[in-house]
Amino acid sequence: MIKWISALALLIVPVLAGASDGPVSADNAPPEVHQGRQVYEQYCAACHGWQGEGADDWKKPNEKGEMPAPPHDDTGHTWRHSDAMLFKMIAEGWRHPFNKSDRLTMPAFGESLTNQEIGAVIEYLKSLWTDEQREYQAKESQ
Picture 1 (cartoon, rainbow, N blue to C red):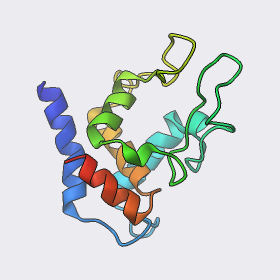
Picture 2: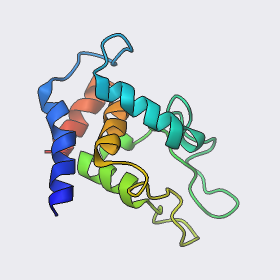
Picture 3: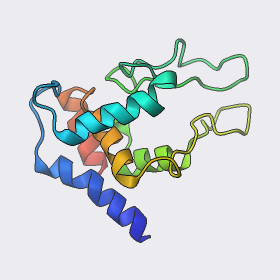
Picture 4: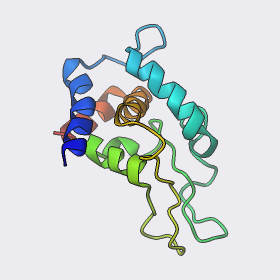
């Protein structure tokens, strides 16, 4: 329980520290966004795209009956999930409820990444969203 509370603190503090008026550029991005991008590129980009664009035809099941990796940019739905839910998905993995297989199509990274690294990835993803999406997601995370 303490692990989850400290992980949530890592996610909430940057949100409370300040919101931007637009997309976070490389010039004004906080250090955790830079770190998050590095971790994202190493662990997430192969499936979710280098710019967070997701897999081709991500809205349709593939030949295995599984939903492909969705985009994490402003065209997807990641911004609709709270920090706690995003943290849980990254740490524990995820299986889309409509998949025809039982396997985790999003692998668990809780053993590979620290809580801080997972929090940094989430902060990086937020930099890909519109102001309105970040505002909505911040409310979901309260």
